[in-house]
Image 1 (cartoon, helix red, strand yellow):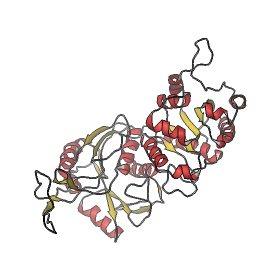
Image 2 (spheres, one colour; image 1 turned 90 degrees about the vertical axis):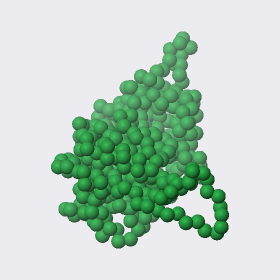
Image 3 (cartoon, helix red, strand yellow; image 1 turned 30 degrees about the vertical axis):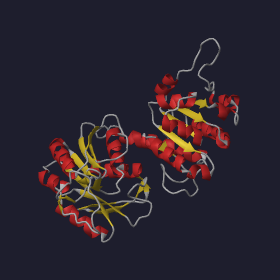
Image 4 (cartoon, one colour; image 1 turned 90 degrees about the horizontal axis):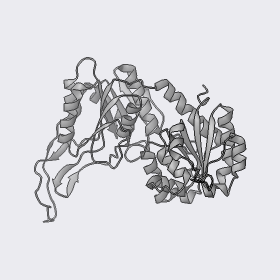
Length: 403
């Protein structure tokens, strides 16, 4: 289905050898009925001339803040309000760093910072630059702002570095935009008036003032779920353990907690008013019986910590659940995956459970990807490895079908 007809697209072009491919992107967008406004960096002009771009778009190319010496200027704010989407292709490591840190020293970055529409980014650089930890941190930070990263053959920001660095082909970039608008058109505000509780991240159980028992959860999956629910119009309460992620949508009510007990208190207080809860947090099953008031000094060769059970959030909400409410759980397993997940489904009174496994390389803790199965009383659905944003769509689609 062609979804780009009538869409207003701001195309940002930066100083990469791949800039010549922007002509192919423009041609494909225009062919599909989109209106394109080019914003180019000074370095980008060294690779492709504005007159070529203007001929393709039938619009003057925006490059500098001031168009003439008479005080006439280009409004990045108006461009941010005008667009249905912004596409930055190619995006260099330099521009990516500016986007990650808010360095608004050119028209393209100021337009990006003012953009109200979704932003798509197609990185273009050599593999060594792409693989550098600084670039990877900037990619992760820019992605955490809710932007869509388009890489060759990967979906939105896959893990691993194979084939990365070079810009995705123009036809595929345009197709990604089309897929986004097709999905947005179908989903729209499908969860309008629904209230959804989501738990995310790890919990930390204190041993003393400087040490804790925890796990490797980054919170990415739970935050992706919260963002997807909010984009579909739901009223979302996100109870998050200690993570370094920004809130994925301005409408989300975020409650930050540290321990299992704090998460339990927040979740049990919120759940009675909700239509559904998705328990994505990696909650500690046990906590130290005694928490030292001061840092424990190293004495002797061993130290024993006596652990006691934490409250079971899933079981408690399962016991509270009334007709019309849905409860979704997660199971991260290392062996006997399906059997353990089905036992948890029954024991916790869940409507369905999302199973993932540490056996699937490049998924789970800290990764941008996941590979899941959805298990319910009706059967099992298996999914291929995808970005966590795409996995969130699959899970919320399943939730919608049951609400």
